[in-house]
Image (tube, rainbow, N blue to C red):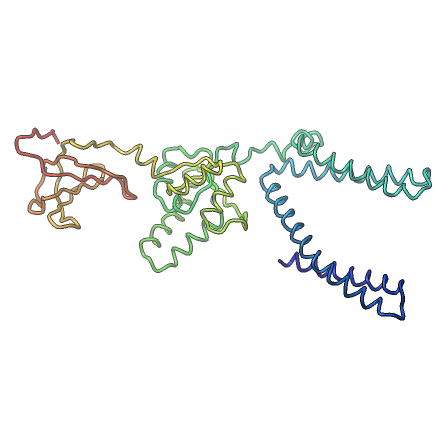
Length: 352
């Protein structure tokens, strides 16, 4: 809005001056100057708002396209376009004394514009080759985040313990790109009133340092994404801009990102796919160690830490090696949660 209003003000000033001159030309001693100023002010005020908004929209679209372009293409396009502009001006101005006509200056401007536009397109199309040709290949030979296979980390993934486990297993060779706005959100959670969220956020921030100790490359990206409202939307836009995958724990965000052409890694889905599969009807033995959150329930744990909730087993809390039959299972943020019932005495019990 600031750009539009300043543009409108400047255009109104130009209109006032033009209207005053036209009015003076018609009749300086009449009402023509006043009428000219009033009409010019009204016209330029309306036109300034319309044209200013069109310019502002065009600049915004151009900025978004530039953000999505590789730096080498932007650099080469700017250099070649500027070179073409200067060459067109120099060649055209050199012809002015020879032509000796008022059309020489418009021809010079046209030639400069054509060379400038052609140079910009050439620079964008052959940006990396041009940068290497002028001896600055070291600027483009360094692999980008997308070429390294890096992933942009969203807040839910930062707060998840699985990133450190993946780094310890050597599965994050491409590195991680952590946006600064994601870190800011995590720091806000650390200082927030919810102790659970604060603990997870603190563990996530400390996990970045643990990943660095595991030789995982972690880049803090300072880019701003003003066109997005929420942190999740900003992470998707940044991943699209960097041409990187997005790592998240939100199924909804993963689906939205894929709809926008961004590849995603859903840690929740990955955990579910890698978790031991306990189909309904499988027989297990567990030690029932405490009461469940619902009446008549008892809770036990498998050797890998997964929780087993056994219905109608409240009276067996404290018993060891209780035979149970799996009813269902579902993944949670803490691992796999199993629901089971007590096995019949006649059912065979597997070896522990």
